[in-house]
Image 1 (cartoon, rainbow, N blue to C red):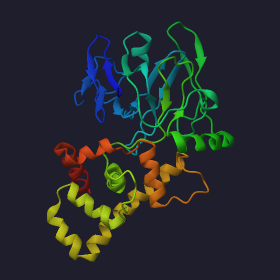
Image 2 (spheres, one colour):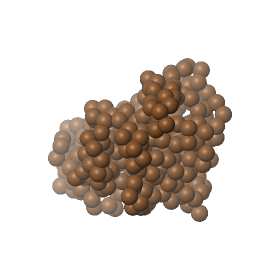
Image 3 (tube, rainbow, N blue to C red):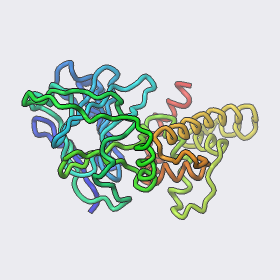
Length: 322
C-alpha cells in the first residue's frame, strides 16, 4: 500500500494531493485553495507538495510566516527569501499535522494534512540524537504562545559542528533528518533539499538525472552541460533553435554556460545541506546519486516531461524571462 495524502480545511473540505502534485493555498485569487483568513495569511501563503515518502509543507510568502503544529511542538516556517525558492519546510511522513497562520492555529481554524499508507522506499530514521539539529532551518529560537496560554521555547536549531558530522552520515543513507519531538504518528521531518518544479534549476536537475532514473543500474553515461542544454531546448519545444545550437559554437557555449551555472548552484546546495561528506569530491556521478537517493529528483518527475502545462511554464522561464 503506497502513501496517500489529503488536506482538510476548517470547514471539513478534503482535497486529495496525489504524488507529484502541488497544492498552493492562500487568500487568493491565484491559488489552488482559497482560505478565508485575515491579513495574517498572504494571498499566496504556502505550498503542499506530495512526494513518494510523504508531504512537504513550505512557506512561499515573502511577508508572513507560517506555522506547523503537532503533538508537543509548533514550528515556524520563515517567509521566503528573495531568491524565489523556499529553502525551509516541514516534511510529514505519516499521520496528521496542522498548519496555517498563527491566528488560524490559535483560533482553531487551521488546515490539516494527513498522510496514510506505507512508504516502500528508503527507510526513515526514528528519534534518537537526530532531533534537534538542522542547520538549514530557521537559526533563531522563537517563543510561541500556545492556545492554552503557555509559552514554550521553540526547538533551537543550532549549527553545531559535531552534530553536523553526525547527521551527514545519516542523511547519506536515509535522505531525511528526523525532526519528530513527541509527534506520535505524525513523524515531522525536515527535507534536506527541495527543488521547486517551476524553476529552471529543476529542469536542469531532471535532465541531469534522467539517464539513471530510466536505468536504475546507473550504467548509462550522464549528460554533460552541452547535452543538458540541448535537452532543455527539446523539452521546452525550442526546436527552431536546435539547428543553431548544433551549428553555432558561440550560441552553444552561451547556453551551455547558463546550464553550468545551474549545475554549480545544485552542487552548492548539496554541499550547504550537508548531503555529501566534506572530503568527498562532488563529481557528476556523486551529485546525481545524491539527488536521486534523497528523493530530490524522482522517477515520478519524468512524467513532467510529457506535461504540456509544465513544459509551457519552463519555456516561459527559459526563453521569455531570459
